[in-house]
Image (tube, rainbow, N blue to C red; front, side, top):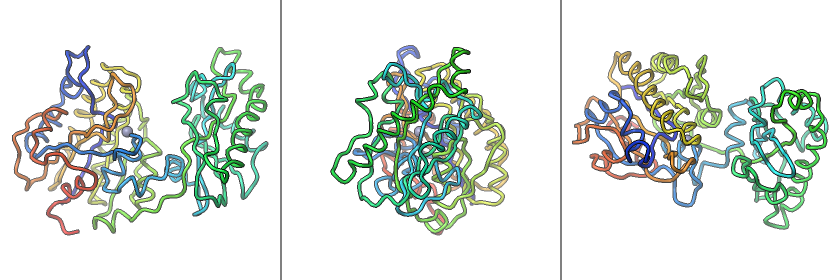
Length: 404
Ligand SMILES: [Zn+2]
């Protein structure tokens, strides 16, 4: 038996007034998801435990059967793993955005989606000014997304930093890293000073002079956030007895694949946006299944549409995922395969960010008896044969009947 999970990030939703109080999943034309729901069995899955901020990291770990309360240590170390940044047990990795500061406020968490080549010059300059090898190190990432690693950080508590996308329009002085204990005071002060000093270095950098002239947002400040230590996760192979592969455009999800020892499959044209290469991902999934018994395919696009509160785009991303990805996978399968489809968390149009509500899921397996559900959506899944489940119960259902 082979196994595929297709995950539409943030696909679940609340009723949208502009869609006649239906959800994007209820409105979208998605015959393949509905077919899985009709021939298989549905249910609701609580992916984010109550005391955890809903996000793709904890939610996807949960889907894969790894309790986020144990295994999620932050976004920084997961994304760093996807960029092959080596961490030691006592290091703390932060994401380090290049942001736009204006009049003492954060105005853009991505510096106008600054290009890779521009952003790389800016972080290089930051590096030259602030790096202390073996203590504070910077690593270049993609576009505005760089990394800051504190080496040999010996305190148990990590300095929490505000995600810049949650602080748009906020006075910087109010969201600078703060110490929550005496132990972390020095680190918080050091990070705050570095953030403020970065402004002096970057403001008149030639890259920013050119961006200013072109009327674009400048990348005039660094912003560390999402800090965490290297997580320690049991390998997927050890846990479930099968080799796994991960297909995604998103570093956070690649990082989960790295730490769980799965194969990371790169797909040309996989963007993490609505214009992603759906067909390429489907083909990559079918190819990966020849070597690995389990393939996890992640599509970021519905989440992006949710954050943008764009209900028409969200419907389109679901339809594209259904037809161009899931449809091609189902057509191309030539051996017995369990196929599951689900979101990681809702990103409701009316909210514009993630919520913790349980998500609908459908699992089709050649030897599963179908339940009564014939449509794949939030409401229909409530009457699914699997009921409401939590955490690793989902993977146990996917692998039901196989030797573990
Ligand atoms: Zn997500």
